[in-house]
Length: 207
Ligand code: FES
Ligand code: FES
Image (cartoon, rainbow, N blue to C red; front, side):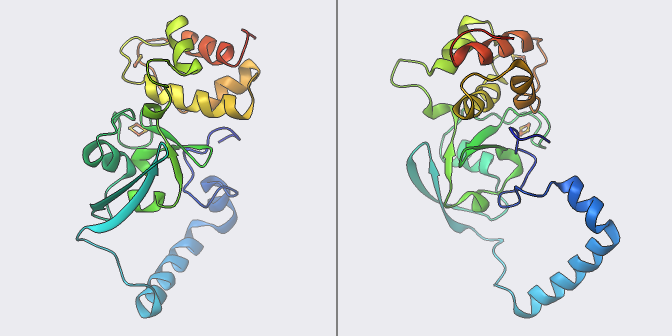
Protein backbone atom coordinates (compact mmCIF):
# COMPACT_ATOMS: atom_id res chain seq x y z
CA UNK A 1 0.00 0.00 0.00
CA UNK A 2 1.26 3.48 -0.69
CA UNK A 3 0.41 6.99 0.27
CA UNK A 4 -1.95 7.59 -2.65
CA UNK A 5 -4.05 4.48 -2.45
CA UNK A 6 -6.07 4.01 0.72
CA UNK A 7 -8.57 1.70 -0.94
CA UNK A 8 -7.52 -1.38 1.01
CA UNK A 9 -7.95 0.47 4.28
CA UNK A 10 -11.10 0.65 6.31
CA UNK A 11 -12.27 4.14 7.22
CA UNK A 12 -10.68 5.30 10.45
CA UNK A 13 -7.67 2.97 10.18
CA UNK A 14 -5.48 5.13 8.00
CA UNK A 15 -2.32 4.90 10.05
CA UNK A 16 -1.91 1.13 10.39
CA UNK A 17 -1.97 -1.19 7.39
CA UNK A 18 -3.55 -4.62 7.72
CA UNK A 19 -0.17 -6.25 7.07
CA UNK A 20 1.53 -4.14 9.75
CA UNK A 21 -1.26 -4.98 12.14
CA UNK A 22 -0.88 -8.73 11.63
CA UNK A 23 2.90 -8.51 11.89
CA UNK A 24 2.72 -6.62 15.16
CA UNK A 25 -0.04 -8.39 16.94
CA UNK A 26 -0.05 -11.91 15.52
CA UNK A 27 -3.04 -13.96 14.43
CA UNK A 28 -3.35 -15.81 17.77
CA UNK A 29 -3.62 -12.61 19.72
CA UNK A 30 -6.20 -11.34 17.27
CA UNK A 31 -8.35 -14.44 17.69
CA UNK A 32 -8.21 -14.08 21.47
CA UNK A 33 -8.97 -10.40 21.25
CA UNK A 34 -11.88 -11.02 18.91
CA UNK A 35 -13.44 -13.67 21.14
CA UNK A 36 -13.12 -11.59 24.29
CA UNK A 37 -14.21 -8.50 22.35
CA UNK A 38 -17.37 -10.26 21.17
CA UNK A 39 -18.16 -11.41 24.71
CA UNK A 40 -17.62 -7.89 26.02
CA UNK A 41 -19.72 -6.36 23.28
CA UNK A 42 -22.51 -8.82 23.96
CA UNK A 43 -22.39 -7.92 27.62
CA UNK A 44 -22.28 -4.14 27.34
CA UNK A 45 -21.99 -2.98 23.71
CA UNK A 46 -24.53 -1.13 21.61
CA UNK A 47 -27.48 -3.01 20.23
CA UNK A 48 -26.76 -4.94 17.04
CA UNK A 49 -28.08 -3.40 13.83
CA UNK A 50 -30.27 -5.32 11.40
CA UNK A 51 -31.04 -7.57 9.78
CA UNK A 52 -33.96 -5.25 8.96
CA UNK A 53 -33.44 -1.96 7.13
CA UNK A 54 -31.90 0.91 9.07
CA UNK A 55 -31.93 4.63 8.21
CA UNK A 56 -28.76 5.76 6.49
CA UNK A 57 -27.78 9.26 5.37
CA UNK A 58 -25.12 9.59 2.69
CA UNK A 59 -23.60 12.75 1.25
CA UNK A 60 -22.65 12.05 -2.34
CA UNK A 61 -21.38 14.64 -4.78
CA UNK A 62 -22.58 17.36 -2.41
CA UNK A 63 -26.12 16.02 -2.06
CA UNK A 64 -27.61 14.43 1.04
CA UNK A 65 -29.51 11.22 0.49
CA UNK A 66 -31.63 9.52 3.11
CA UNK A 67 -32.43 5.89 2.54
CA UNK A 68 -33.35 2.70 4.32
CA UNK A 69 -30.98 -0.20 3.78
CA UNK A 70 -29.99 -3.38 5.52
CA UNK A 71 -26.74 -2.87 7.45
CA UNK A 72 -25.05 -5.45 5.21
CA UNK A 73 -25.55 -3.36 2.05
CA UNK A 74 -22.33 -2.04 0.55
CA UNK A 75 -21.83 1.58 -0.36
CA UNK A 76 -21.58 0.49 -4.00
CA UNK A 77 -24.94 -1.27 -3.96
CA UNK A 78 -26.59 1.57 -2.04
CA UNK A 79 -25.43 4.04 -4.69
CA UNK A 80 -26.20 1.93 -7.74
CA UNK A 81 -29.42 0.19 -6.80
CA UNK A 82 -31.03 2.66 -4.36
CA UNK A 83 -29.81 6.06 -5.55
CA UNK A 84 -29.25 5.47 -9.26
CA UNK A 85 -25.68 6.73 -8.98
CA UNK A 86 -24.17 4.35 -11.50
CA UNK A 87 -20.74 5.83 -12.23
CA UNK A 88 -18.97 3.42 -9.85
CA UNK A 89 -19.17 0.01 -11.50
CA UNK A 90 -19.56 -3.40 -9.95
CA UNK A 91 -17.04 -5.69 -11.63
CA UNK A 92 -15.25 -8.01 -9.20
CA UNK A 93 -17.26 -6.97 -6.11
CA UNK A 94 -14.33 -8.05 -3.95
CA UNK A 95 -11.81 -5.23 -3.81
CA UNK A 96 -9.62 -6.44 -6.65
CA UNK A 97 -10.31 -4.38 -9.79
CA UNK A 98 -10.95 -0.77 -8.76
CA UNK A 99 -13.97 -0.20 -11.01
CA UNK A 100 -16.03 0.91 -8.01
CA UNK A 101 -13.51 3.45 -6.70
CA UNK A 102 -14.84 6.59 -5.01
CA UNK A 103 -13.20 9.47 -3.15
CA UNK A 104 -14.16 9.75 0.51
CA UNK A 105 -12.86 12.75 2.43
CA UNK A 106 -10.07 13.12 -0.10
CA UNK A 107 -8.93 9.49 -0.20
CA UNK A 108 -9.77 6.69 -2.57
CA UNK A 109 -11.76 3.65 -1.46
CA UNK A 110 -13.32 0.62 -3.10
CA UNK A 111 -17.03 1.20 -2.56
CA UNK A 112 -17.72 -2.54 -2.96
CA UNK A 113 -15.67 -3.17 0.15
CA UNK A 114 -17.32 -0.68 2.46
CA UNK A 115 -20.75 -0.77 4.05
CA UNK A 116 -23.10 2.09 3.36
CA UNK A 117 -23.53 2.65 7.10
CA UNK A 118 -19.76 3.12 7.43
CA UNK A 119 -19.82 5.94 4.90
CA UNK A 120 -22.25 8.12 6.83
CA UNK A 121 -21.02 11.59 7.79
CA UNK A 122 -18.38 11.56 5.07
CA UNK A 123 -18.00 13.47 1.85
CA UNK A 124 -18.35 10.90 -0.93
CA UNK A 125 -17.46 11.77 -4.51
CA UNK A 126 -18.06 9.70 -7.61
CA UNK A 127 -17.36 10.17 -11.28
CA UNK A 128 -20.98 11.25 -11.70
CA UNK A 129 -20.23 14.55 -10.00
CA UNK A 130 -17.16 15.57 -12.00
CA UNK A 131 -18.53 17.11 -15.18
CA UNK A 132 -20.03 20.56 -15.15
CA UNK A 133 -23.06 20.43 -17.42
CA UNK A 134 -21.74 19.41 -20.83
CA UNK A 135 -18.17 20.27 -19.92
CA UNK A 136 -16.06 17.33 -18.88
CA UNK A 137 -13.73 17.50 -15.91
CA UNK A 138 -10.14 17.99 -17.18
CA UNK A 139 -9.28 14.42 -16.19
CA UNK A 140 -12.25 13.04 -18.12
CA UNK A 141 -11.23 15.14 -21.12
CA UNK A 142 -7.65 13.92 -20.84
CA UNK A 143 -8.85 10.30 -20.90
CA UNK A 144 -10.66 11.06 -24.17
CA UNK A 145 -7.69 12.93 -25.62
CA UNK A 146 -5.22 10.13 -24.82
CA UNK A 147 -7.38 7.10 -25.65
CA UNK A 148 -7.51 6.04 -22.03
CA UNK A 149 -10.62 3.94 -22.53
CA UNK A 150 -11.80 1.05 -24.67
CA UNK A 151 -14.62 -0.89 -23.04
CA UNK A 152 -15.09 2.08 -20.75
CA UNK A 153 -16.41 -0.12 -17.96
CA UNK A 154 -13.30 0.29 -15.84
CA UNK A 155 -12.78 3.91 -16.84
CA UNK A 156 -14.71 5.64 -14.02
CA UNK A 157 -12.58 3.65 -11.61
CA UNK A 158 -9.41 5.02 -13.23
CA UNK A 159 -10.68 8.59 -13.48
CA UNK A 160 -11.42 8.84 -9.77
CA UNK A 161 -7.94 7.99 -8.39
CA UNK A 162 -6.46 10.24 -11.08
CA UNK A 163 -8.58 13.12 -9.80
CA UNK A 164 -7.60 12.32 -6.19
CA UNK A 165 -3.93 12.25 -7.14
CA UNK A 166 -3.98 15.52 -9.08
CA UNK A 167 -5.85 17.29 -6.31
CA UNK A 168 -2.94 16.42 -4.03
CA UNK A 169 -0.19 16.91 -6.58
CA UNK A 170 -1.14 18.59 -9.87
CA UNK A 171 2.16 17.59 -11.46
CA UNK A 172 3.00 14.12 -10.20
CA UNK A 173 6.03 12.24 -11.49
CA UNK A 174 5.20 9.21 -13.62
CA UNK A 175 6.07 6.77 -10.84
CA UNK A 176 3.68 8.45 -8.42
CA UNK A 177 0.92 8.32 -11.03
CA UNK A 178 1.59 4.63 -11.65
CA UNK A 179 1.34 3.92 -7.92
CA UNK A 180 -1.87 5.91 -7.60
CA UNK A 181 -3.44 3.79 -10.34
CA UNK A 182 -2.08 0.40 -9.36
CA UNK A 183 -5.31 -0.50 -7.59
CA UNK A 184 -7.16 -0.52 -10.91
CA UNK A 185 -7.26 -3.12 -13.67
CA UNK A 186 -7.86 -2.67 -17.39
CA UNK A 187 -8.14 -5.87 -19.43
CA UNK A 188 -8.03 -4.02 -22.76
CA UNK A 189 -4.52 -2.65 -22.46
CA UNK A 190 -5.29 1.05 -22.22
CA UNK A 191 -2.89 1.54 -19.34
CA UNK A 192 -0.45 3.60 -21.40
CA UNK A 193 -3.25 5.97 -22.44
CA UNK A 194 -4.48 6.15 -18.85
CA UNK A 195 -1.01 7.08 -17.63
CA UNK A 196 -0.63 9.73 -20.32
CA UNK A 197 -4.00 11.16 -19.33
CA UNK A 198 -3.02 11.24 -15.67
CA UNK A 199 0.23 13.01 -16.46
CA UNK A 200 -1.26 15.56 -18.82
CA UNK A 201 -4.48 16.46 -17.00
CA UNK A 202 -2.68 18.48 -14.33
CA UNK A 203 -0.89 20.53 -16.98
CA UNK A 204 1.73 19.33 -19.46
CA UNK A 205 2.92 15.82 -20.29
CA UNK A 206 5.76 14.52 -18.16
CA UNK A 207 7.77 11.38 -17.58
S1 FES B 1 -15.94 -3.92 -8.00
FE1 FES B 1 -14.95 -3.03 -6.27
S2 FES B 1 -12.84 -3.46 -6.55
FE2 FES B 1 -13.84 -4.48 -8.20
S1 FES C 1 -11.10 -0.11 -20.87
FE1 FES C 1 -12.26 -1.25 -19.43
S2 FES C 1 -11.21 -3.09 -19.09
FE2 FES C 1 -10.01 -1.92 -20.44
